[in-house]
Length: 185
Image 1 (cartoon, rainbow, N blue to C red):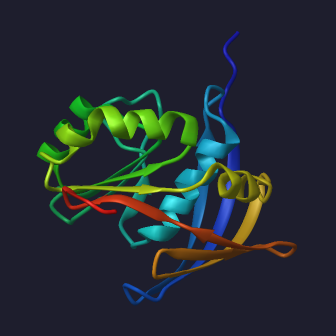
Image 2: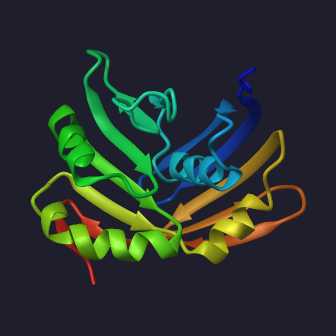
Image 3: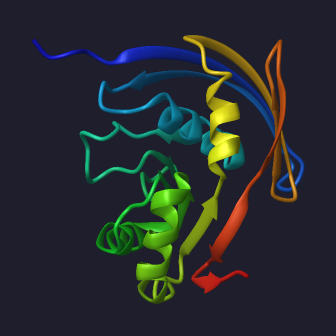
């Protein structure tokens, strides 16, 4: 018998000082048995970084033609395509062909370093691509906040996300390897 998804509820109070976006979103996140809590929490972090009224979760790992998160306009066109982890170059090129903006939030440093080094030349040909990173240590701290019912407050400013629940306050530094097809060093 196949295992079902584990359901998580998250209320996010987000203040993005860089973009001037302030709001609260209630999310229901279905974590597939093959997904880790780390991956799910990085997806929630990506949601905080790019919060918008039209930002939604995709169907997950079972839908290869969908991102982890996406923002669509009223016509149904994809404005922003967001994946977490280390998607392959071919998938990112397809994403760029279907959307205005492609973002990757890479985590798991043991995989991200080799992934970046072997693909950065090809990634530079995708002018819509932005690649951001988070350290393993910070992912572990973020994952420690994971519960089946979460209420998180996030403030975003200058590549830093301050995220808090009723017990913990974290300062997460989000790195950037590439911005709109240009390497950042």
